[in-house]
Structures are given as C-alpha cells and as structure tokens.
Image (cartoon, rainbow, N blue to C red):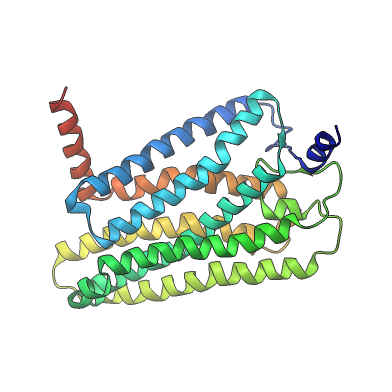
Length: 312
C-alpha cells in the first residue's frame, strides 16, 4: 500500500496542448497522421541511403543520421501524447518523464552538432574538393556521427538529472503535451535562478555557436559558387545548399524562439506550438526537403519501387 502511494506521488500529470481548443480531437488526429507520414518518410529515406550504393557518400550518411534522430524524437513523444489523449489517462511516471526529457534533449543537441557537420561537409566539397575524400573519409563520418549522439546524450544526462532532482509543487501538473525542461521548471517549488542561467548558457553554446559556424561557412560557399564558370554546376550546388539551409531554419528557428527569446517561460501556448512544429512538422519536412529537390534520391526511390513491382 505504501509503495502504491509513493509511486503515485512521483507521477506527473500532462495537461496536453491547448486544452480550451474546441477541436482537439481533430487536431490530435492530424498530428497522428503527420507523425505516421514523418515516420514512413524518414524510415524510407534511411533505407534508400543504406541500400543504394550511389548514396553511400558522406552527405547522405549524415542525412541518414539526421533521419534516425528525427525518428527517435517523434517516437519518444507523439505516441505517448496520442495514447494519453484517446485513453483519457494524463498521468506519466517519473521514469517515463525522465526518458522523454533525456531523448528530446539528446536529439535536439545532437541535431545541432550534426547539422553543423553537414554544413562543414558542403563547405569542404565545394571549397576544397581535392581534399574532400581525405577529410570526409568513412571513418571520419562515423566519428562525427558518434560524437553527435554522445555529445547530446552526455549533455542531456546532466540536464535530465538536475531538472528532476528539484522539488515539484503539487499537484505536479505539467502545462505541456510531453515532459519538457522549461515546462517542468515552471512547477518547481524552489529557487532555480542559477540553473535557469545554466540553461541559457547551454542554449548559447548549442544554438548560437553552431549557427554562427554555419552562416560563416555558407558565406564562403556562396562566394565560391559565384566564381564557378559552369551554370549547371552552380545550379546543382545551389539546389543542394538551399535544401540544407531549409533544414537549418527548421531546426534552429523553433529552438531559438523557445530557449533564447526573452520572456519565453511566460508564453507556454506559443512554446507548445513551436514544440509541436519541431516534433511533428520538422521531421516530416526534412525528408521532403532533400527528396523532392534531389534527383539522386528520386532516382533511388524509383529504382526501389521498380524492384518491388518486378518481384510481385
């Protein structure tokens, strides 16, 4: 009996998103459909990259890691959110809450590192093509991928443990659709000003530093593109870079608005909307940004569909 009460006291209540919205059922259904499309799209993109030898290049290897991170992020949040809504069960255990915080932060930080490396990959390919096979070797690609996952996991572990060690005010209701650090800090019953400063510092390191490196690299890339004599080569390079810039905006935009905007904690509805965009729409738009604008991916998809039809 005592154990049951103790377990209950450590649970959290997820209030969900936009509780006053009249058409929440329709909205959740749309979110579920988008999640399924994003899951299928990213899974298909990973399979195409792994199965087609023509896509065994550093750029596509890094893209496959980005898709794996998207799958990890959406699958750790959306299924639980949908299940809670349709079952009417808003409770989430302490362990499940910590798991959501850990994976969401791991992926968010890992994606920032990975996108920066993807930009460096384009910089080397365009500005230093002769040394590209040496610099972006298969071993180097595996190392930077492991660094992205490990860097995100280590940083996330510290923030997850520190966030959950605070005393939470009863009734432990989180004004969000998943366990998110800033939302949990709003229901903490002690002074957390020092930790909030640490979150800001981490945000600067994770968001602004990579973003400044990305923008600097793209300035050099566009200067190199302007010096190209071949219109065909220039157009192909711009198409690839524009896809990557779209991905940069999709990932960094919501994160900067949530963690670096003054008074962000006072606008929970806007934060939920931005998180909904980042956890649902961004993973869907990522494979679309690369597949619809990339002939190699489209050719690989047609080849795979041809094989599938020939076996029937």
